[in-house]
Amino acid sequence: MSSHDWHRNPDLKELRRQGYVPYTRRNDPHFLPKPMRLSARSESCEALNALSMALAANCDYNPDSDYPFEIMAPFEQIAAAMGMLHIYENGRKAYDSPLHALSVQEQLDYVIALRGQDTDTGQNKPLRLWLTEKFFTSRGIAVDEIRQWLGQFRQWAIKNGLTESLRKKYERHLLRLERIGIDLKDKHSLRNRLKQIKRWVVSPDLAKEKQEKVQLLQDGLADIENNAGQRLDWVLDETQQNLHSLATAKQKRQNPMYQAFVKWSTSAAVMTHVVQSMEKTLKQEHPALLNTDPETYYKLLLERAGIL
Image (cartoon, rainbow, N blue to C red; front, side):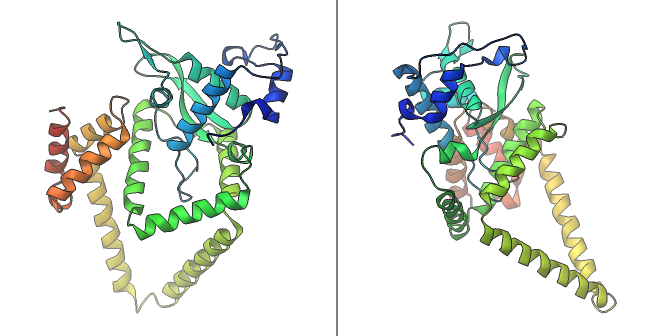
């Protein structure tokens, strides 16, 4: 990734031959892009390379996610990782170079960006980002190799017992997006494009395995229907367990300490590794506290973070 030569990138050359289209002029039917010299400046290539590294480092590689390759960090944090986040004395933040590099990679179809109005600043910003398959194949990475990486990532997560923590991390990410007010309900074309990437990611073997499991579940449901009278008690117990799990999850969402922790941990004021380090330390000190007293658990985290 870091050794990619943007001067030889054929997609970038073709884009420069046609000319860039700034984001603010994309909906202007009268705007005509101006052709540029084929070789990009070194500063532009460095910005594209730094952006690619930052996006790859904060990408969700879990193949079980609804939409894979989503960037799990705000773009301000991406700009900070690039070393191009400027904060003025009045508190205003600027990152023009990362935004320009993002616009270029959008036009190259390497990145998909969902923009919207930031509730904190009122500005139009990239709020959700996804990497496309071309982001990887343009670097000479084969499709089978990417599928192998994702399969190894899943096996590594299962082996180390990280599937639950990855799921919670994804839930925190969705809660942050819900707080901002971002959803894909009305974005039909975007959802179709992301589903296309999902189909590209899932290997034929994995799809076959999933189909076999679906068939197994269907056969199991058929057996339950045939033996409904004999296994009614089992079905009722299973339903009661599901209701208990739903009630526990609802109680957790209504916990004010948990909500305050999610709001702080998903903000741009703290890095993700800092939050994970605090949680790891507290779990080592109090292994059973999260299950026995979640409110005290999140209260201690907020106190250590200096929020309370």
